Length: 462
Image (spheres, rainbow, N blue to C red):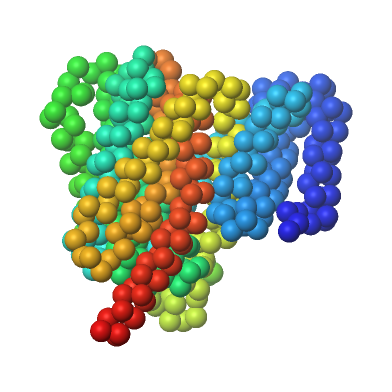
């Protein structure tokens, strides 16, 4: 099987050659304005255009490569980002300014907001109510066990770091990447099985609980970093939890009253793109409000997608406009890969020469996998493939990367909560849990079918 066509390889090598020539020819003759922006002598707009060319090309080539191996394309984007970010190790520094460009960072942050908005759109409050107690219990078990296992592993491998760092490592293990598991279930025709409904319902609840934990942990660390003595009291922790829960519940309740009227007003407006613009207004407004009350903006973006019921904007679709998911997709295709490639670029491969970091990554991965297997203890129906449910909850994917990126920006004692070496260990955990899930989940579900068929055949003989 050919990994890349000749045309793709030629395009990629040509882009690298052009950029190398550009860096050599113009890198040393930049104007003061260009140098102050971290560029190569061109205007800031020219810098960002060049960076987008390289990043989008790398994202598509990386995604193509991993898709050919039936692996999630997000891993290709991440790994190609790691390659770009570490070319300085072989003497090429042309991509180093990419890591410090504020415009690129802002675009990647908006990409995360759009990504969580999409995740929220894939679920509705009504669907969550239908999944029942089984999914809720699976989600609870699937958050508590990984959190404490991750906390314990962090204490074991980085004991000299603060307790807040240990807690944040535990938080990165809580959420599940619902998109990766959903894709596997769809590919093998199991999306409508009872196991699939429990997994997907639990994964959505899991994400909400993970975001609440993230809000609590970041709130505690921020309060502690500011020197507030009561910032880490039990009352303060309860207030942060209440704030996160109230925000999501409030968005659901208020959104149910406000959004129908909001979209009815939008329906009266002339011009194109009203549905998309009004939907983005809701997304950005809730993301902004979440940030203002001390939560991560992604919590607001997820809540915006969750409350966006199709019935609210039915007037638009009735007159022939595309579904909201179709409208938001082109924006996502542009912005989300920027986030993943940039997250890969922030990985320092020199940290992998430290066997302690590799050991930390390995044990963290084991904790991430075992923590989700505890989910099976919440299933009491013997007809359900409990092992498959635990496997379906394993992948951390984009959610783990989002948590890591937030930790890398969160400061405590004048250093990031997630330092370069810890960030590398988390990225390895994300890659491994995302790679291992599709094959093992497929094997478990198909093997479960064979057992059911064998049991049915045995019963018929009797």
